[in-house]
Amino acid sequence: MKTAHFPWIALGIGLILALALVKGGAFAAKGSAALPLLTLLFMAEFGFFVTGAGAVTGIRHWLGARAETRPLYAGLGAAILSIGFLFVGFFLWNGYIE
Image 1 (cartoon, one colour):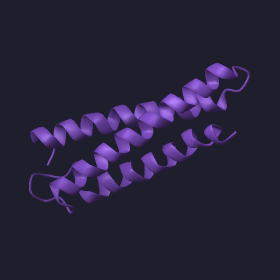
Image 2: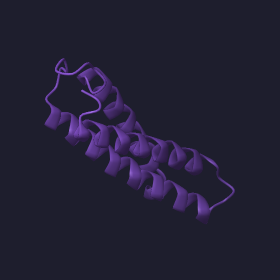
Image 3: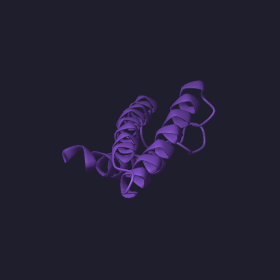
Image 4: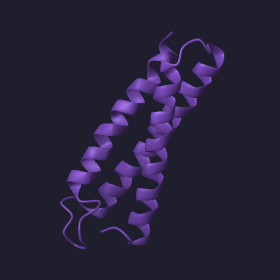
């Protein structure tokens, strides 16, 4: 089943994007970011959508086959990352982080 692999792929992409946001200066002091603000915002938005879709897919797959817990773990991990990307995007947009 191909949908069973998507939450893990989304989780991996989300972790790579989170690392890129940290290394790119999303949490750096104002004006000292290594990447432009628009790039950081795009990365946070893309991470939010990919991990959000991974969370929905993983939790729906777990609801269909409750004997397996691995889709639930991937879905919950993706949901946590999705919420994190949402907050990082809002804080970058409002200027709290930068």
